[in-house]
Image (cartoon, rainbow, N blue to C red; front, side, top):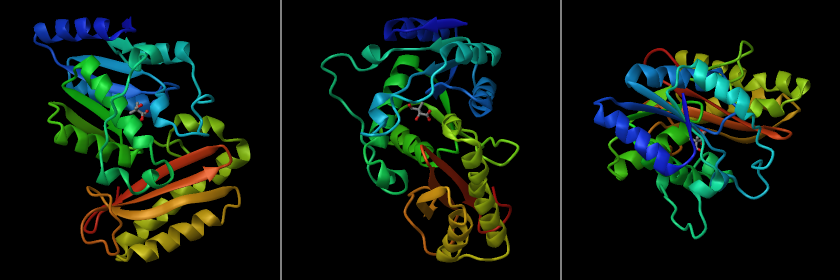
Length: 286
Ligand code: PAF
């Protein structure tokens, strides 16, 4: 597996792959990898000849007072996991390579970034859209895989790729959960044993909401109340938001008429966890 640090090296690698008639599948990450990331790599492998994974803790997507400095990092462990997943190349640029002196261009996706995480993290998605654009330009992939746990991020990236005519297939991958139901996340590391136990209320709430939809409830407020009751029963949790939105526009809906997503964000002391469930009006919930 090649480990590349500069855009120039990455371009040479990508051009070699393309000249040999092969395609690149790409998984961008911020490292501190877990089985959720590995599942994205396996999916990318199925869709392309060559797998490139990037690790870059992107400063521009963290707001003031957020966890950029303390974000967990373990390059040696990550390198082993990426190699074991069968990647051909690990792209590992540093902050100077990504944002050299004089850097001043940002990518702004408008409407779909306003609700949900955009309410409490107003600059987050500009940082995500910018770094993903730069990574796409460096790696030159034919497809890229993003987890559905970050549902809004996936919608933002799909919108950006469409609006900017990027010739890249964006693939959404199912949420991977721990045996206790908690969605896998690098930030789960921040949870102490009591918070870890308490954080199970997210998946419990989403399961209850799915069951309620399956039983015929279509009023968003009733579903939000149900999830709020379950999550607020955990004294260690502090709700940031619980909302039901259209899966494409991410605008709040009052009634489930088309597929919708219930998205939740809850603080457990240092950790802000997000999770979601796609709610299908007719048929199985996911
Ligand atoms: O989902 C993440 O890990 C990050 O937001 C991403 C897409 C790698 C951009 O920094």
